[in-house]
Length: 272
Image 1 (cartoon, rainbow, N blue to C red):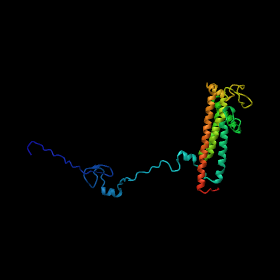
Image 2: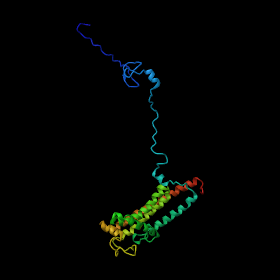
Image 3: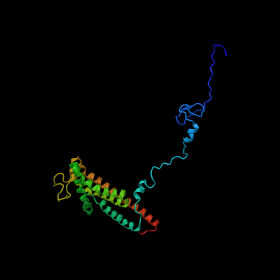
Image 4: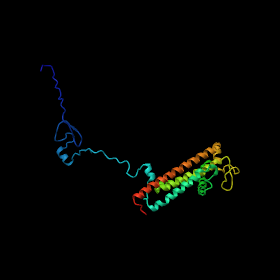
């Protein structure tokens, strides 16, 4: 070494082994028996405080989003019944479906002006729900009160369908209730169609053309909304909607009967 010259010693580039104290996590540059920071002796500490090594599970976690048989496709939900299919349970349903098909043919095939639905006994069943709708919706003003009669007719079979489908799990009963929803659209159509003419007899022996303004629901509703000139078009729309709903309900009921017949055939037709 030359005088006056300071020689610099380059540090060792090899990485030093380090460890952390298991108690205070102090980093130690060299291996030692005790921690200079907290003073514990590693051998004694680890004897009573074993280090827990986290192990990774090689298998990926199994995530179950939904329980099997709880969430089903829509078709399975609409065709699955809570009660097992039995012969006694099955026999009356084709008769009901056949009756609905014949009845639908008569109601859908008749023109709106004939008021075939209004002349059937089902109109007498729909009428109390119509009048109850006026009372239920009275707090919402005159316009909604008049509309409440129609809403009452549609809400009651809709509620029945919902209870049968979701509560009691009786899809066939729900399909019949859906048919009733469609029939109520057909029942409403002549009333809408009569808004300008006022020829239909109303409750109490009145007629739309002679009764006080507001007594004829759809005359009032369409006049107040400025749509009176569209009464025939709206009536045809309601009639088409009802017809489509009735047809869909019968298709639904038919699919249920086919499914139940297959179940009974596979189980050798249990009687009960």
